[in-house]
Length: 489
Image 1 (tube, helix red, strand yellow):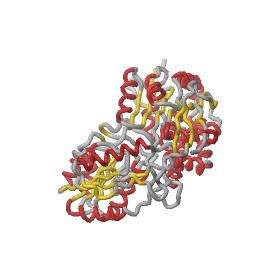
Image 2 (tube, rainbow, N blue to C red; image 1 turned 180 degrees about the horizontal axis):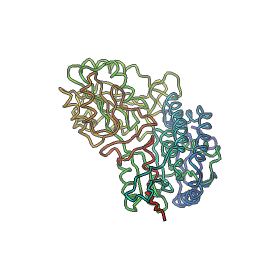
Image 3 (cartoon, one colour; image 1 turned 30 degrees about the vertical axis):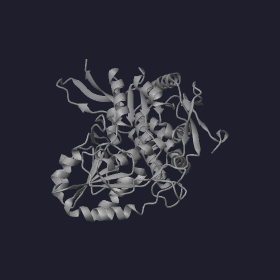
Image 4 (spheres, rainbow, N blue to C red; image 1 turned 90 degrees about the vertical axis):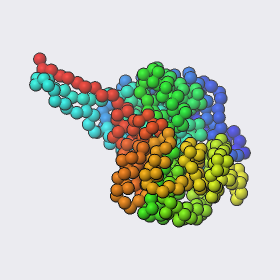
């Protein structure tokens, strides 16, 4: 066990300074590949700490919004350069803290760099339009104003990319930020804030407060001086955040998960479909909101697809994400591991056939981690729990269908609608899928888990609050439109 003297306590960042919480309580951030290693101590901050951060952000916003878009963008360019220089260090922390393999962690950090540079450039784009007026002596146009202080609440599964894709657009459009990360990834999140600190961003423009969701998360949702809330996490917590924001008339944005289908048509390239299903469903230990969860396969190719899938999944190496050759790391925590194991047991109880996996791994140096086998269920009915609820683990449910119409109906028969993909060579099947699938992200002959930073991202139904993140669509959330009418004297 690493002793407390060797472990850093993650401080809050408020008004340009790192500081301890008014509360003396801390939680341990544990390495999920070795639960004997404490990665960091994370402060359980108080409402008083949050109030101070919000006050700092509100004060700073008055000057920050007066800078030109190019001036704000120059800070984001600096942060991107620093993040890029520190990529190896930050990626290693990410792997140690939440288990993602090192290559994945480096890829995510590189994505964070790209997002920062993208939004830095957005500072030079137009922010309004000229609109013809019915009055020939008048000039009418639109412009955009920042909302003010934005509360950013993020999960642990993408501890660099998700915070940055929320923070960067908030800042470029003239808002300031109060950021609450998930405790399981707070040490990684703190390193992002260090990059802003090193870039000498003005005091109070970005503030960082760790703590429990019931205190800091709920405090952000309820705070009268926060004008916008962007949240990614579970649907239960997201709905509570949305209800609190709605009650006080505050703009909110929620991304709350999915139960994402892949459809494999009878004319599909099965090798391509298998590779994409494995990557989309099992990479990152299935801990992605866009992860493939249900695989809906036409009867005529079902057995061939299943055999290829099982054969490939058996080759996956599970272990510590820092070790060379490891393809899949551990679940993020004991609680998440137990959640996945409960779903697997539920699947067996409801009659699904366990084709492969389903067990905790505690051999070959994995006895001190939260490791689980990649898992495949056969003979799944779409009404089973494993086909309806988000598991957030490396579990694939195979469903056999007789037609593409049945496949799309089954794909839509869940409360979520985040991402979906189809594998087919038939253009008509592609077009029918695009038209009829109930998902915000639609992919053809590609895995369900793939989001490009320049494109809008968000879901339908209970996957989101129906706004979009990333790309130029982000301006719709982070700003308010002003319509200006100017009449000559």
